[in-house]
Amino acid sequence: MPGNRLEVKQVIAVRRDITMGRGKLAAQVAHAAVSAAEKTRSTRQDWFNTWFSTGQAKVVVKVGSLENLIELENHARTIGLPTVSVKDMGLTQIPPGTFTCIGIGPGPTELVDKVTRHLKLL
Image 1 (spheres, rainbow, N blue to C red):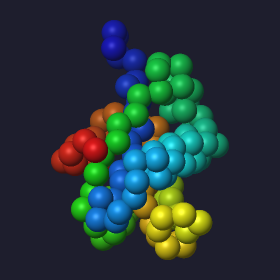
Image 2: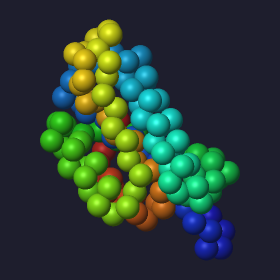
Image 3: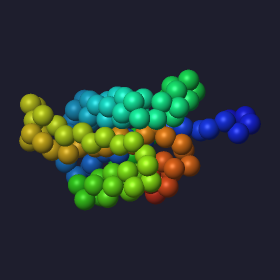
Image 4: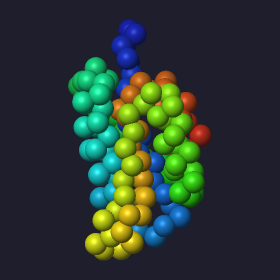
């Protein structure tokens, strides 16, 4: 980006140790993206507005286990990033309460990368 404008992005991290069809996976990612954006809008409106007005950059990455997802969420919260966790209602493919993914941000790319840079794209 030109100048020193704040770069902002959102990352969704998805567990890959549970079996979900592609449609189910897409729905879980969408839940995380929308919920995390809404949380950011209410807690860090400046980050939300920048993100929203610059294309709403988002990246989906994968984690290998529930423990990895929890560690990621805790790290993001520790450094001040808005986060949300998604737990499935259990109406279709997976048991109720299954923790499927998290949404991080939108937040400053520099901060988000501290938490997620090491993860592989989904």
